[in-house]
Image 1 (cartoon, rainbow, N blue to C red):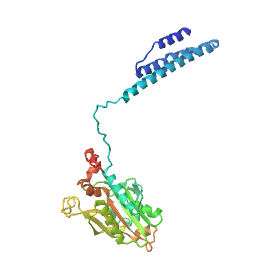
Image 2: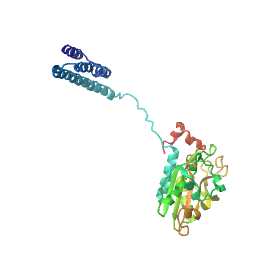
Image 3: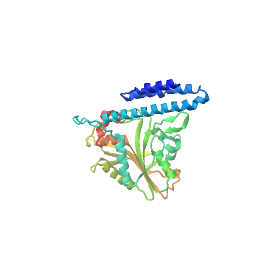
Image 4: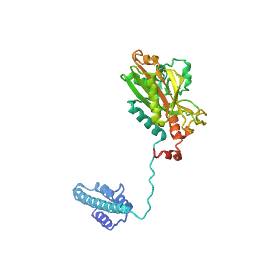
Length: 339
């Protein structure tokens, strides 16, 4: 046993590793699972009790010596590596740091949120997987009503009452159920409809809807709110027009157009040569919707509106094909670095 301990000690004392990888190799060779020290401890177990105290101390002293030396080698070579890394060549030319950009849909969403926050609106969010009540029934869509065909819906096959929400109006229903009056909210989120993908439509898109319920809310309040939004979003010279329309959950209902920014109102393929582009739907909340959600329609009134973020971004950034928002083409996305 004495002879083996001396041999290991002498052999180890002659080692002088030049780099970290050599230090690690030595550590494994002497202290690893199959190393010299491990084998010594295995032989130690076979010694008679009167020798264990003597050789136990010698083996432990040898192990401590090897461990301390290996640790000192590690520190030495790690310091050398760090010093080499920290050396800078000041003659090298600078290189650009490519920073990321926000997605144009996120940029538009944040702008819209800030505009309505200034008017006192708060953000309200809800689930993307919804039930029939919140998406349709509570919004004055009776069962088998033709108005349900206005939106081609993705239903969950095994649970026909569960679906991917077709609009963020479901979040408005949840706010009417849970919040105290008055309510003044905007509801940003992703929605889903089974539509053919084209330059003007997609099966996934993003909406922001707004809801304001209080005493004595009028259509004039709605018009002034949307006019303020349009001018803040598209510029002070922006014009709007409201056209009569139909939505099951508002009465009266309207669609709002703004003068087309892509062609300056002269007419193009995007605005179908009318000079106007539809950006949102709106109207006074139908009294039936208020009553279905536990709100006294004789005391309270309100308005609601909803817009697609892709359409707003198309106008704002003069993008003619909304499919670009979903393709993650870096050449397209890097154009929004300054926003």
